[in-house]
Each structure stands twice: as structure tokens, then as C-alpha cells.
Image (cartoon, rainbow, N blue to C red; front, side):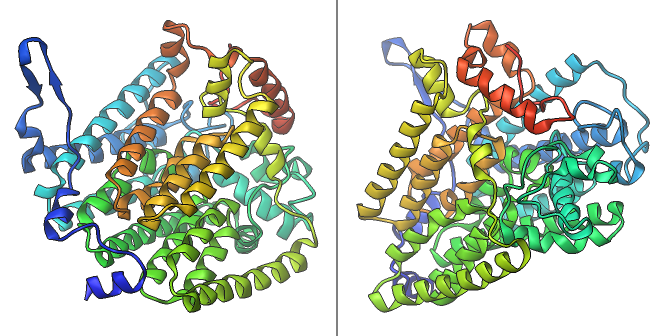
Length: 504
């Protein structure tokens, strides 16, 4: 039954049951020493005891982080030294007393915790074949339950969503032509940070957030958190179903996505709206595999209504939809949904569009274009480097569309190319490619997902500037970064740059 639905969708399983099992672990390297000796890691790391210990480490490490976040004001919760209401801190607030530590101690402790979680994640992936789906599912649910109790981790995006919703629905100002700074007397203003930025979020997401504006801020905050958690669980469920349809081991697919520390520490704990994009985009894959082509086209356009990034998946859906009749169905579903979204956008926001240009002009120090420009000695991600990155992205997508083979693998590599082209790279952007890497047939794509995970953990941990400064690698010294800092300060307007803004 699985093979029939898979072949009908234009996707062939990579191999039989033996191949499916071979994909369920990550092979650890064997180091060759002089005189032909080989050093391999202990086999115990592949066993069920190591797997369960790693899962316990993920849960306990996450719980420790949440307990510290909720205990009292800290650098991990933005603006908490000014405003840290009980409804934001959550039910764990004060339950374990208060903790006092310097900023340096907190930064080094968090950096160490991230490394520990990363190592535990690697052990889970190597031992996943020895773990039951029930064990993995319990871990996923427990992690979500713990993170629900946490205030937003390190960034204020959740309050920005609420601020834009209140700006439009409560104050009658179009969030695509007005800024959060124009609602200075609203209590949400002191909890947000992009005070002078027009909304970069999709019209569908903004429209869905409008009803929250009429609720007390504390109620809207918790509703947004609960819905985000549910969306994340829904995404994991879709990954499981896609893996099942493709004849792959759902245990590995779920673990690769849900137990990734970037996924739950940065994505879930930050309560980002990326899940509202990933659920319909992953649903589009699932629907195409089930031969519900028109619904697949509609789903991908709903994802675009949240974040334009999801549009990258559409051409690969068209490649997979064969024969031509199925391709037409995908296009019909996408077109009809696009018309409805356009009518909604004009009705609510007239002809204004999300502000992607300003955000695209900002830099994070270790984005690939900025690192590339720094290594070339041209000052980082200059306008020329960014244009070259855009051209390289287009070329990569065209070449991937023309190639043969698994369309999910090609879509995954296209997402890698997109992430690599961004000047404004945030750690949770890695989760854009994780569902594709989890269900595609390519082992190399999964390795790329792991490499990218390690990269963002190392370059976004709080002490990254100190660690890389020891080896003299400081991409924040480039002229492009300095120009970006000036623009970022203007967009923050009333606040200091965020945790990722590192001074040279």
C-alpha cells in the first residue's frame, strides 16, 4: 500500500526494507592513525542505554534552561530587567527560588549547555534504531510541554507579532505602512523591539493574528504560545506521515527534526511563526504523496501567505506531479488560493506588501555571504556580494529543477542554497530544511542538515565572539557589518541592538 501511493506520486522509494533501516542511524567517523591503526568510537554509543541517556539529557537540559529563564530577570529574556510580569514568566516563576549570576557566567553556561544538547542529539541519531517510536514520541511531547512554560528565549519576535496585530486591529494603523513605535502607549511596545520597522510578515499570518489584539495582552500571549506549540506538534506529525508514506523509518525522521537542539531551543522556545509556514508547506508534500494535488497546491500558497520563503517549494511540487494532468491540478489549487489571499490582503491592507527589503539589507556576522566577503577581504556582505549570492541561488534552483532523481532531495538542497544566500541568517532558519532532509532519500542532505546545525550552534552561542576572537576570526570588523549596524539601530529606534549584535 505504501509503495503504491509512493510510486503514484512520482517518487520512488530509495530501496527496500533493508535500505530503510540503513537510513535510521548516523554513521560516526572512524579515525585512521599511523601504521594502519583505526580509532572508532565505542559501540556502546549505538545501544539503547546510550539512546535513553541522551534523551534524558535533552529533557533535563531543556528543563534546566526553562527553570533559569522563569526564575527571574536575566539576559536570556529580553527586556526582563525592565518588565517581567508574572504572566510572562509563567507558572514556574519563583518555584525554585531565584538565581543570581553574572552575564558572563550565564553566557558561558548557556554555550556549554548548547554543546551538550548538540552531542546528545548526535547520540540519539546514532542509537535511534534501538529506540521505540513510543519513547521518541514521549520525549517530543515532554520537550514541548516544558518549553510551553518558558518565556520567549533571547528574542522578542512573539511580542512583535502581537504588536503588529494590535497596531492594525486595535489602533487602526496598517502594519505594512506604520511601525510599532507609533503605539508607544500600548503595553506591548515595551516588550517588543523592532520599533521603527514595517511588518515583514505575510498578510495571512498578520490577518490570523488580528483577533488576538482584542484580548488582554497576557491572554493573547498564552494563546499564541499554545498555538505555536500545537503547530510544532502538527509539523512533527506530518513528518511522521510523510516518512511512513515513503517507506522510511518514522523514528529517524521524527528524531532528526524534533530532537534537534536548534529546533526546540531556538525555534520552539522562541515561539517563532516559522511553524505556521512549515505546517502547510509540509502538508503540501504529504498531500501530494496522497495524490491530493489541488489541495497540495493550495497548502503551499497558504505557507507563502505566512512567509514568502515557502514559494521555493512550488516548482518542485510541479516537478513531482506527473503526468501533466496532476501538474495542472497543483497549479489550479495554488492559483485559486492565491486569488483568495490577494483579495484578503487588499481588503485588510490595501496594496501594501510585507517589508522584506529592509530585513534583507541587515546582516548577521556569521551569515554565509558576510563570512565569504570577509574572507575575500572586501569588507563582508557588500551589495556586490549579496547580488552574487542571489544570482548563485537562482542558478542553483534552476540546476536542481533540471536534474533527475528524488524531488524531495532537490527541494532540500534548494532550501540549503536559500539559507546560504541570506545575509540575515537566524539559527532557527535551519528548521526550514529539516523536514525535507528527514523524508528525502539523500544521506548527503541529512549530513548537510547536521553540518548546518553545528554551524549555527557554534556561531550563535552567546560566547561566539570571544571564542572566534581567540583565533582572530572577527567578521564584525567589515565595513558591511558596520553599515548594517547603523541601519539596525535605526530600526530598533528606542532599543539597543539584540543579543546577536556583537560589537567589534
